[in-house]
Structure formats: C-alpha cells, structure tokens
Length: 299
Image 1 (spheres, rainbow, N blue to C red):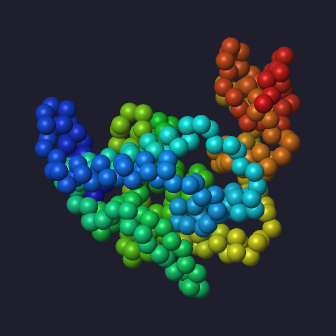
Image 2: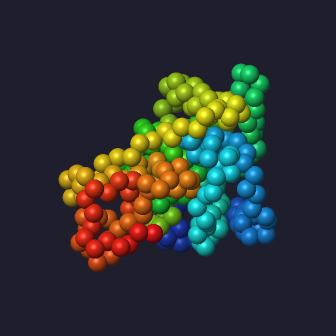
C-alpha cells in the first residue's frame, strides 16, 4: 500500500506544478484550522514541563526518561525551538491535506487513543492518521534523517536499530490501541519537500509484541523508581576512516537534552580534534587523548 500512497502523492504534486488541481474548500479549511491550532498551541499556551508517560515518549531510552522524571537540568531550549516545532506541525497539516487531495482514503486523523496493558496499566496518545484502517505516523525529517531512516538508505530496520526517539513503540501502541496494524511512517524532508513512505513488516507480529514489551518495561521501571543506569557507552572516534584515539558520544546520546548531567565532567564540546579546517564541526567528546593543537575552544 505504501507505493500506492506515494504514487498518488507524487502524481498530485506533479500535476499541481503544471496547473490548478482543484482542492476542495473542506480540505483547504481543515488545513487552515490545523495551522491556526498549531500556532495557538506553540505561542499562546503555557509550556507544561510536568513529566508524563505517553505513547510518543515511552519508547525512548529508559535512562533519558529517568533523567526527565527526576527533574535533572535539561539543556536550555534554543531560541528557535518553538519555530522548529511549529514547522513540524504545519508540515504534518500539509501532509494530511495533500493525502486527502490526492485521493488517498483517510479514515481518521489526530485521534486520541488509550492502550491497556495486561496488568491494566494504561497509556494514552494521539495518532496522526489512519489510512485504509492502518495507522501511519507522519514525520517531518531533517535531510539526514530522511535519507538514512526513511529514504533509500533507511527502512524499518534502520529506524529500529537507532530508535532514540521511540518511533517504533509509539507506532505500535497507537495501532494496538485501535486494534489494527501499524503500517509505517509517512516522512517529509523539511528541506526539500520530498516524500517517503516507510513500511513496517506487517506479516511479523513479533515486532509489535517486542515494542509493547519495551513500553511496558519502561513504564514498570519508572513507576518502581528503578535505579538509574546509562544504557549507552562512548565510542571510538574516526576521522578520514582512521581511529583518532579519542572517544565521543554515541549517536543515541547526541540529541538527548540530559547528556550533560548524565555524562558529567568528562563530557566536552570541542572542535573536531583532527580537523585542519578553519571552522571545524563541533563534537561531543568523552575522552581526548589526541588533542587538537592550540585548542582552547571548549564550551
């Protein structure tokens, strides 16, 4: 079904490049209302920092959830934080409108659901879209994430292997709450507007049961205040395909807001130590045994 969805969208957008495609006033108005709601949510409502487990976060690494629950100091939000979130909201609204306008059969959108585990523990969430009775999650993706997770170099295995945002349990929780299948992700490259539809292996129910188990294990650990344990180890740095002797944060930790309290004083943000560029990229180091000459750039 993913090819059918993508083909319809691509055909619609191709035709829209040539001439007016005649979108219904209902779709236009729904898109406008979604954008207004997004702006209101991001700029007129108080940001609530109260920790809650929900379908969209319970699949994240347990150590990150424990840090957040404990009230550890998170990195300050950059000034463009709300703009980034607003862009994501508006891309999602545009995706829904384009899917409908292209003739894709959309059953429901933005529906609040609740899933009850075997022990009657409950968790809530709001799924993005149901298409022909299958749940899809819509993601606005950076160029790197689009290519390496959702695009030609990605796929379900790539997402599952490095799932620090908990995308896999999130999707399966939505689907199990609706007693249907999680079919995958509809991703839009937020820099280029390209689309990808990334399928899950629908025939393999083990992925669903594993995802539900991970979510339940995380909930149990949080509810019982299990001892904190960092789940990731630092890794060797490579530059020009050669080991530098330095160690850096693993990918799963680089985007975590709690990396500083988690890794402590050993964590240093430095220019790439082997680069001779005038403006080298900055890297999160945990150990520097082969330093950059005349460094002085720690921050």
